[in-house]
Length: 190
Image (cartoon, rainbow, N blue to C red; front, side):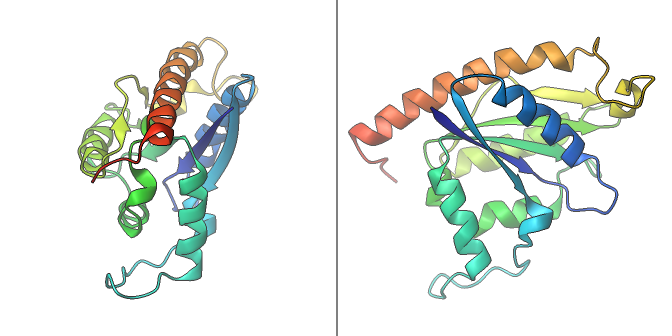
């Protein structure tokens, strides 16, 4: 089994992130090779002020770190705000370091016409700096509000995002297994 942490980046009131994340997590759970943890940054409520290197991390950060350390792979579900990603996501990323090393990261983004791809481009740079491996395949949801079905469900059965999940997960699982095997064989050098 590959342990996957699906991270909901938005913490705003009335946010759409949980809808997207629950849809994605449900699709991931249909596979027999994934154990999925839904990680909601709004529920975790990490401190917004980072501590010094010699300070003990707050309990919430330690719990978050334990969850990330146990994961073999990550999917970040992020909106795009002002051509970037939410500040609480950057804080969550910056609180930890080694927990991200040598693990694959995929992105499911949503927003206006860009579908969150500007946010994803920035996140790829950040995760590369953390020695994580951003995979090339991503799911982008431009004008996501147009994907509601007549009965109010999301997304429509005909939405292209429904067929985009399998190739993303296939690649993510491949990378997760390869990197887990490599980390098991020898510690990742930093």
